[in-house]
Image (tube, rainbow, N blue to C red; front, top):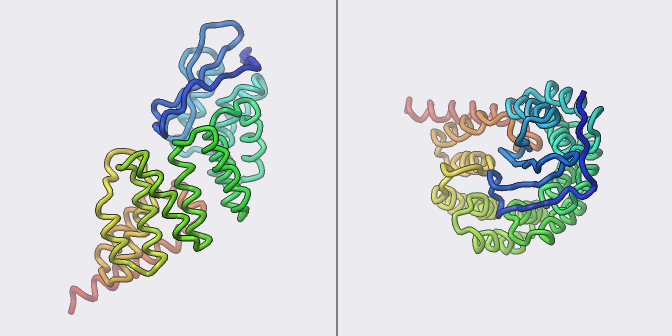
Amino acid sequence: MLSVSLTVGLLLVAVLNNSPAQDALSVTIEQKPQHTIYEKEGILYCSGNTEAAVCNNKGADELAANNINAAIAIFQEGLTHAPLFYPFLYNIGIAYMRNRQFDEARVYLEKAKHIVPENPRIYILIGELYAFTGREGDALVLFKQALHINKKELDAIIKIGNIYIERNQLELALRYFNSALNINPKYPDAGIGFAKVFFKKGEYYKALIRLKSIDITQGNYDKAYHYYYAESSYKLKDYKTAYEQYKQLLVYKDDIFFLTHSYALIEHRMNLARQFAELENVQ
């Protein structure tokens, strides 16, 4: 049986400029030495070999492998013994998000937010939930709360810009993408944001130029990169490139991108691009 409880004062130690490997939460567990909670690819892991840490990391590994139901079962079991253990609440919220069980996800993420209100990432996750369910105004409030905690929270800045694109407030969106570039000139999602604006304006060539300038090899990036690369190429009748980019996008079938886009539709677009490319070769 897990015998771990979390003290009321669970402290946020650092959230370092959107660098997941360096994000850390310091927790005190039943007067034992301090343990570290760290983020890896959006999922929380724990140092140490307590039963709670081992249980959490087992569930985290299942979640990273996209075995969502197995992960949920592990976190649920952990929560029966340690209902306030922050990583359980945070990770099960993410698992339910990926399972499109948004109401369940919000319940656990809200609990996590009450335990560690200093963590900007939790506001971003809840904001994403609202955005997925059409509550863009509420999402904006949450993303801006994340920025209030950490004005250099790049993910929040980009997500605000993306909402303004959806609202066709393109100049306002560009302000946020520029703000992100001022913090980190090489941040890929800011460049992708500019490409989205160009695409929205019908300036497909400019969108492609921007996308080609982005280095996506140095870490995580918005997989919408491949979508806009493919769509812009398709619009410009470069069907071979469109096919290649749609195909690359489909590799990331478990990505958050497919919470708001149809996998089958992207697959259909890929097949159309392939057919047109083959026709060009025949001619």
